[in-house]
Length: 388
Ligand code: ADP
Ligand code: MG
Image 1 (spheres, rainbow, N blue to C red):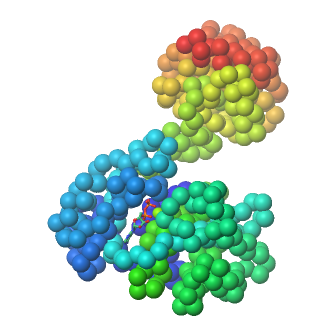
Image 2: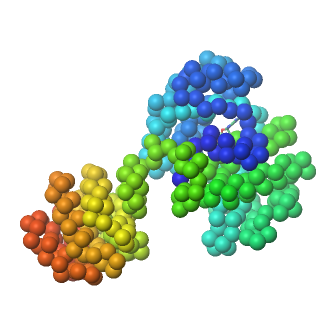
Image 3: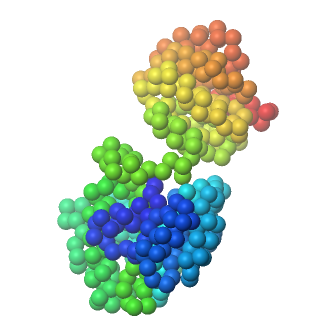
């Protein structure tokens, strides 16, 4: 689950990390009130969407008067914004963060994530912040510092100091960095986060470090023990179909192809997408209906797939190990009857009660194309999508 910048900064503050004064606003008037409450002469008005790259897209504006705070807030609120990180999707701007403007001398990069290859929580830092960190990593890898934290020992202050000096910081800045890193490490562990990114972590002209941007992503598998985080969820920033899927405990990811996939088991779902690609097609989604799928969930899954106009054919690929093929067949029949299906449906069933499942489909009177195996099914689905 992703968080807004203002929420990330609230989490940082809760863990003793200093953040510039700021307030979230949902109307231009609230933005002006926020600026007045913050005080000072300059403010930054920042669009709150679940993506970075806002600066380049016009979502970060420096305001020198209260009038321009109002104007910038007015210009952003109620609009939609796409950045180079949103893959073409436009996200609604429902709120802006009004924050103190600071004089930046240099922008650094600092992130915390789980590094699977070393099985450790890892800090990544660079003296080249503010820009695309992927580009820095590709072109000047020597400018990226990595710190793997030992699981037993935890993060040690001396490691933070080493990192700070490697970034070329002064002793005072190193102390500030250490406090930030220890706070982030505690936050990361206690809230079961997946990613924290400060880009930029700025060195101000007065020499102090300042957290100017914050991106936080939490581990959905741990959501049940963090009701405070769940309360911060903003589903308007999420893919509509994926939100619906999560309400039915379906593991669904929207893709950009035109063949809808309904599969049980994440591994089989991945393999199905691969085979569709191999046959020259392109999947419209990843969907794992799960081992314990009920008839109702299969119906919901079918409706989800069909909710996209891009879907030109559907490939149902079920291996009935735990789930029964006859129950899947009932779900397909119920869904096809309930929703007006105009696209061809290719079904491959294998496993428990497969004969009963095939029999149900055959007698349903619906135009369903049976497939012998995964390759045959993918081929038929690709052909059907191309013919459409
Ligand atoms: P994004 O990563 O979405 O583009 P940022 O919060 O990183 O958004 O802002 C983009 C740039 O705007 C930063 O790299 C920084 O140069 C500038 N900026 C952001 N917040 C402030 C601030 N409070 N004061 C001064 N400049 C800022
Ligand atoms: Mg940023």
